[in-house]
Image 1 (cartoon, rainbow, N blue to C red):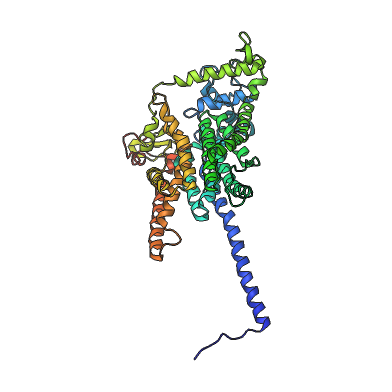
Image 2 (cartoon, rainbow, N blue to C red; image 1 turned 90 degrees about the vertical axis):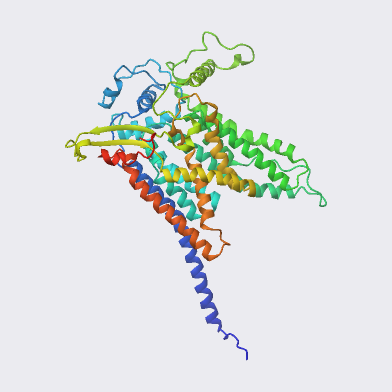
Length: 530
């Protein structure tokens, strides 16, 4: 005996179709809502953790003694001026106009100090919130950019949210957003450049395939592929890398890494498409990519020196007047020749920057997290300023310490990604590994320089991306069995829960919150910590 489905009247068929369309439209609306709600909530959380009590401590902490005062004199003079002895205490007390017109020698380009100066102009130079407003803003924006980059790489709203959430609640990201140093700006522009590069890849490869196929003749593979000039995201990536270089010179390494990545990926794609002379073809496209990427980076970098170029009092401003260039370079304007001489002076100074420091940490130690940097520490006796810490008193400390569980898991995840890339040749993994290499490997060439663990804020977003890929593998692929995915997702949730607990435990030391000395001692897990 067979049964047949009941016949539906025309009105019933229309009703069911309309209901199905309504469900689909509802699902799409929810997806769009979540796609904006998730990054908005994570960014809001990051902003709260970075802006809360931002003005504390009202002191020039760590290298703020250089960057805050240089930023304010540069904002007013167009170049960094000198300050009298004892200027720190007077500046903190509100005497912010005591700089002189005499030039000060600074080793970093001006852009980061202009950004700090903008916050001081907005809120007043006597306000410690004003000193740190720009870093808190860019540190919050860094979380949002990481979300977008993770979403572009993983295609997953959930794991993009995880990547940005880990940065939002992490101590290294929080502390570097709460001090007026340059490194958070560097990290932001570097990550922005990589995001633009990924956007270019998504847009360009299909166009390359379409235009190359059109060149086939009678089934024969094309001898040459198309040279693509319409790549606005590469121009944007060049501008972002130029801005990174205008904050610190280490941004140049990122510019070079992105250029190399573009050449290699273009070469591999042309080989995949069957282009006969793909190596030479990749060189042709590489020259076009260079024109799109590098000149705009140079213009942005040079533009950051506008104040120095348009005024007369900057350090080495007239260095070329007495001995101008001859021969081929004689046409170069004297201010630009002087700027070149200033760069030579900076380069020599940075190469010899070997002063010992109690918190210095060479690049080979960074993965081990042996010596994070304490930016500030203030002691309070019991009974003073609300301290109830017993005989040992209280301490408020600003400690640029990443969540240790996340840090070590991320380092392990990079090793895992190297293994996965050797097997899968996944371009998404390649982006993460290039980011790690560009922000870490060059520092290994300077083992004698005085450098610090907090420089890893530029590496940190890429380490978190590596961890996100590893967590996604733990959670299980879509084709995995239900039991496998359930167990994997439970492991990820437990990991995230422990991360949150550790972040709560460490947050007082990331925000200079007053704590009993004994509570502070609970964080001394290793000899080099705090």
